[in-house]
Length: 447
Image 1 (tube, rainbow, N blue to C red):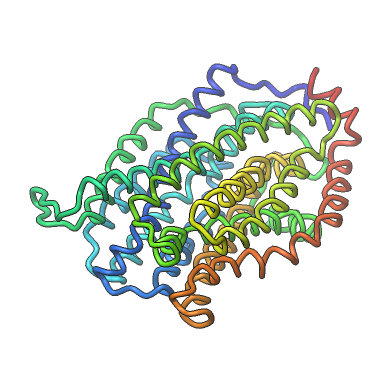
Image 2 (image 1 turned 90 degrees about the vertical axis):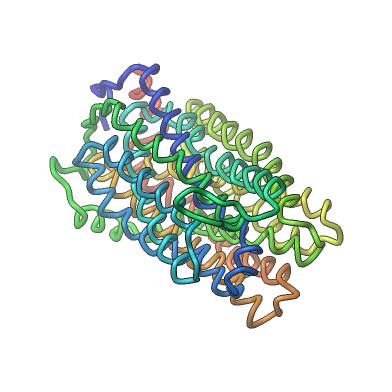
């Protein structure tokens, strides 16, 4: 492979773009996570069961978040990506604000679908834009910085929930809207600012697309080319993405964490949200950025499998701690174990896309990233929170929600961890097929 002809934009532009994309990602995670912290008052006001809450936390959001990413990935390979992100941010932010006006499960379900449609635009465009702005050996840190939004967004969502719930113990009356419960006011409060973020992306210049040839690349590609590429390598992509799916399943099952702490240890929602926000904001960003740094450093020294190894190591951290923390004897011991679990999730989330981009032809990278997110998100959203709700209502009982939450990483984690040796071997075989050995790659990319 010859990639010395690639002309990347300046580092100043690249990092400015990454910062804006990361802020947008933070907004998206706030709008995505806020529902979990407000689950108890929503259930009390609207009479929603654990299974229904699992559907709202998972499938309602995931139906279009996962599936719309694929055609949007095709658009990301052909159309102006900054405008696609702008439109998506406006849609998901408006839908979050409108969630505050919901009066039934159906209203909440429709609002969550709309949030998912808007958020589906972001990551396929973001990863395509980042890969067009940084050479392969320097992508780890910007991608790691971008993925810090997972923990920052969740942490800010937690702190916002804690602040609003602790300050607003009574209903709020707004002009034109009328009287709102505290949880309804919270959705409106966090949703509206994202509309301004969407408008900001209309001013961001589009990064130039790189034309780096791979042996399997064509001048023009479509979804059929992408599917043919992935399906012809199903063992490689299947074993690799199973670790990302596992991370998503465990991460999204945390949507029930506030309810677990309430039912198991009696913590009020605002107090749990405060503690959880601190955990996410301390463990997540540090881990993700260090993982990106370590990936780049090891990659530069010839360990081209570094992104994959960090992903797998994260899985070996998040599975046992995911099983243990809901079963701890005291809430503070559970917080300590949950902190380690957050580190594992952050490790796995930091380098998965970096590893994917390193074995993907450039003319289908937007579509492949979209397919990657579609599969991982469908697994995470449809299996994570949904299975916690089902286990709670139909297996362990609602008073044993902690057992239901612990069961999810146990059931899905053990088979995936057993795939680690095969996943590594298959990944390296594909990497060498595209790039040659590590010394060849290092010599061309640093030129």
